[in-house]
Length: 432
Image 1 (tube, rainbow, N blue to C red):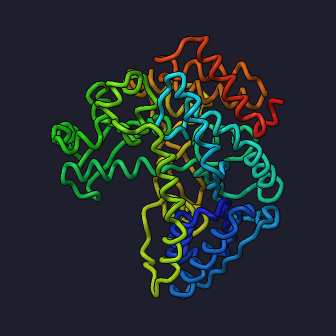
Image 2 (spheres, rainbow, N blue to C red):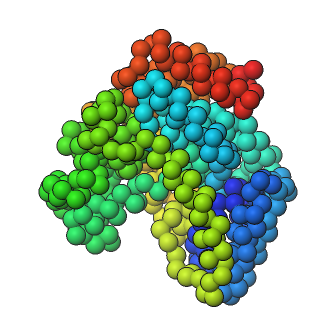
């Protein structure tokens, strides 16, 4: 029996999917699943517990499920820890990350990954991440630790600096590969690719179908007006840089200088996208209770395994040992030779009974390395600035953000950074 702890288990949909997939592997079907959340998430953690128990009963699994607010008790002797927290419990706490930069012309869509919005979101999460990391190191130092919390690179980099050998996981690589296969009418099982870079800004340097280069077919598919409308930013990036990027168009438009520095460019490439995340979360909050009750009321639940990486990795390392390759986020130890050493990069990783082995990738194409290098340096600077409680380092991380630099002067970035610090002063004790 393996003890698998999910921290942030009030994420009802994510938790039930991860649990379903874990239990679908025979070698993990007797696992002890322990759900952890804070009291504010109790209703959703209780619902997660109920649906997992329903999965256990329906599947006839020998597993057990527990839920608790006592994180230390949960982590004692854990074999695996999955982190999926969101430290912003209200829309208002996230909204200021978008609203303050918008005053200075930095127009973002989601604001959870990088740039001024992502940096302040990361820093607000640090007290919780620090406590979680200290508990893992004290109570289950040998556990397999998987992080889904954004901003991926900064969260993963920070926990690594504290000594936790965490691997960062994201959905974008496999979902984009499936989308490209669909565009060109290929069976997903016939597709192979090489994809690496930094999270949400990794690129497919190879994309093949049955061993043949599929990029000509991808460029051809991108001429379809319907496809172009859905993914204008990523298609323009492919046309300009030669390769396709992993994360969605709206999201990618806020990571670089080409699409959001003028209103006409936003209207052309990502219309109506400002504050997309706030709208989505608001809608989700308005409907999630009803959706949760609907799922709980189902007589039967599909036990079919999905494509989320976590369960496959856990099975490879802690289960039957079936090797599994995935793209994950780890420190750059010479894996990508033209990105900064120690920065968090997204590369292929082989998981097995021997553990996790990141794959050497070599050089990125130089035009992509230039973009990724700036991104990686900004994220590393933000993590180091946070750990040193140095506001000037945070300012410098924001100064070099491509979109911010495209629309703001040094003085404006200084004012914006100070305003963001003031708005967040109650949640950033390390800077007081």
